[in-house]
Length: 211
Image 1 (cartoon, rainbow, N blue to C red):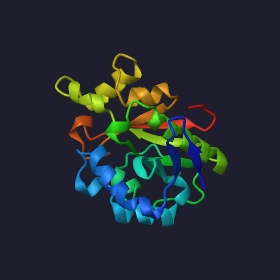
Image 2 (cartoon, one colour):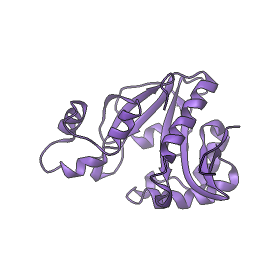
Image 3 (cartoon, rainbow, N blue to C red):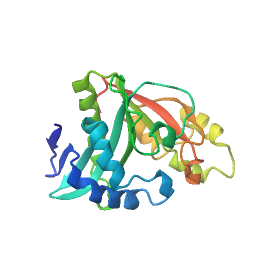
């Protein structure tokens, strides 16, 4: 079972069943724009622990859940797909026990704990899990949150090309790219989130990369 004590005294560890209620509440705080059908709830988190417990992590401050990530083992596909399709409507029954990539379904940090490097610590923890399981690395779908500032002047496809060319910096995808994630393509209609043009940037983070 994964467990790591961070410098700040916080702990990253494998999710346990008693965390599910707090994770339900954290989802609503971290992802206020998400449609209800795309927001994980207590019942989903409990099921994830039955499907793939090693891929479910929380950040704890004492007993308080302040961060989380959910993931499955999966294959790398560059075809368009939606979040609900790849997550089996949030249940994660799409988990492939022999899949050679760790597909990150979501990641979030409580607003009061942002700016402390916890998201990077979660990516680092997922890298360590990839190594433990002998996987090729992580699949990440970055949400282009900066697109809302350019939606009036360009399409999401044009924004993505400008992002690849280094002419635009996206606060989410850009940070993931600086961490070593490599864009593979733009996924259209990934999530119901107009701020991101409803799209996502499919990226891979190879297992040999140090986060």
